[in-house]
Length: 431
Image 1 (cartoon, rainbow, N blue to C red):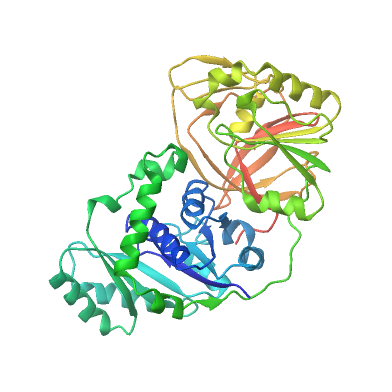
Image 2 (cartoon, one colour):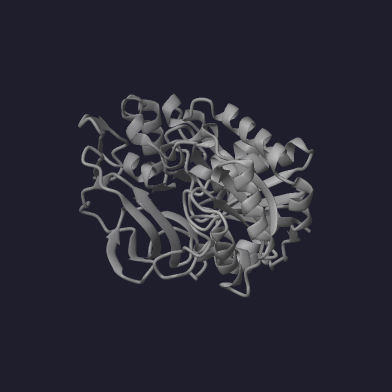
C-alpha cells in the first residue's frame, strides 16, 4: 500500500511550499518515487509540486470530495510510488467558512502523520508552546515532527532544538534564513511554473538545502500507509469521446477528473485553441477548462478554426462545457485588463471583462438540472477576477457558499452548450 505524509504549518507564509518542493526534489534524488499532492482546490501549487517531483500531482480536497473519496484517490495516486507527499493549505486547522476541509481534516481522513513547518523568526523557546498546542489540539491528528524554518544562527537553532525536546516532537531539521528560498507570493497564486523565471534553479536549490539540513531517514521513519477505501464513482464522463482544450490559456483541470473519465472508458483527445486547433470532429463532448484566456485574448480572437470547430460540435449535438476561463471563451466578447475587446466563440451571449478586476473566491455547493451527466448536487470552487454580465438564458447552476448562504444563479446554458465560473470538484457531499 502507498505510504504518505502531510506537510503543514501553523499559518500561511511559514515557508511550507518551498520546503515541500525541496523535500520532493531531495527524495527523488535519493531514488524514491514521490507522488505529490495538494490539500484543497488550488491549481497552481500542484503544478510546482509536479515539477519538483517529476511526477503528476493531484488535489485532495476533503471538503469537496469527502473523506472516503479523498482516501481512495490518495491510495490510487500512490500506487507504484514510494511516498505520497501532501502539501497542506493555510494553517493546519484552517478550513472553509463552514469550518471543514482543513489540512487537519485531510490528515485525519487519511490517517497520516503531519510535519509542521514552523517560521522561527523572532521567537526561541516559545516554539515549544506553539508546537505543543498544535500537537494536542485534536486527538485524531498526529503532529509527528517539525521542521524549523528561517533559523537565524547556530545559537538560535540550539535554543529551538532544546525547547523542542520538551515536547517530544521530533525535530527533522532546521533551515537557515536565506533570501534565495523565498519564492515571491505572486508566483504562488497567479502563474504556472513555466512562467516563473528560474523556477528549475529554485527547486534544485531548495532540494540541495533540504539534503543538507533535513534528516531524511528520520522523515521517512514517520510515514504511514494510506488506509485503502472502497473505489467510489464520482463524475461520469461528459461523453464517450471528450475533446479537452489544453494549452497556456486552458491550464486548470483537476487530474482526478480526467483520470476518472479515462478509467470509466471514455476516450480523451486534446487540442490547442491557441494553435487554432479544432476539437476532434467525432467528439461527442468538448471540455474547455479554466485558465488565463484574458492573457491570450488576441490569439483566441484570431483562432477562426477553433471557433468553427466549436460551432460544428454544437451543430452535431455535442455537449460543450466550459469552466471559468472556458466559460468566458464560450461567450461573445472578452474585455481584457487594458480595456481591449476580443471576439470569443459566440456560443453563449455573454461578455466577460477583467478591466475592473474584483476577486471572487470560495467553495461552492452547486445544484443543477442540465444535460451534464453528473449528480444533481455538486461541490466546486470559484476563484476569478473577471465578471460576466447575466445572459438572457437559463443558468447552469444554483449556488451556495460553504456556509450555506445562497449565491443565486450561476452561469448560462443554451441547449447542450453550457458553462459557469465554478470549477467542479466532485459529486460527493461537502464535509
